[in-house]
Image (cartoon, rainbow, N blue to C red; front, side, top):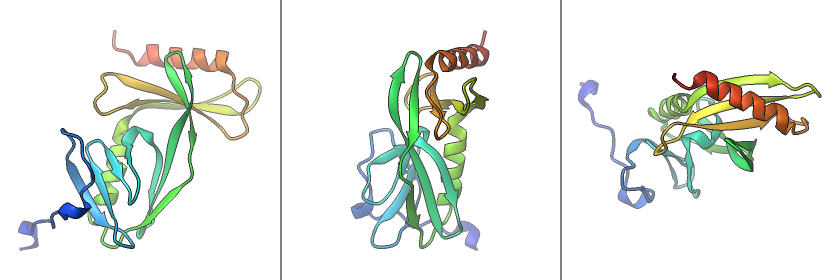
Length: 169
C-alpha cells in the first residue's frame, strides 16, 4: 500500500516566499531546523534566497549531503554574460526523498547547449545556453577556466557561432 501513501506537506511556517506562479516540486528537512525546497523556478536553501536553476553551475548528491555550486554574473557582454563560481553551499538532508532527483533533473533540463573551447593564448572557456524560467529563448553565458585571461574577441565569436547554430531557421 506504499504506492498510495501521500508525501508529507511542507509545513506552512517553513514555506519560502514563492512567486505567484511558483510551485513546490519537492522538499526535504535539512540539518538544524531548516528545509530545502525545489520549485519550478529554483532551489531554496536554508537561510538563503532562491537560486534559479540557471544559476546553479553544479549540484552533487553524496547520499547524505546536497552540494551546490552557484554561479554569479561578473561581466555583461553583448548577447551573453560572463559568470564565475561562487562558494560551495553544502546541506545535510535528513530525509531526502525525491529532492536530489528533482535538483538533478531541473539543473540538467535548464542546459540547452554546452561546449568547452580552448583559447589561442591558453586556457579555455565553456559556452552555455540555458533555459531561464519566465524568459523566452535561451540565455547565453560563458565561464572561463581558472587562470584563463579573458579573450573577449574570441569568445564573442564563439558565442555568436553557437547561438547561430542553435537558432532554428
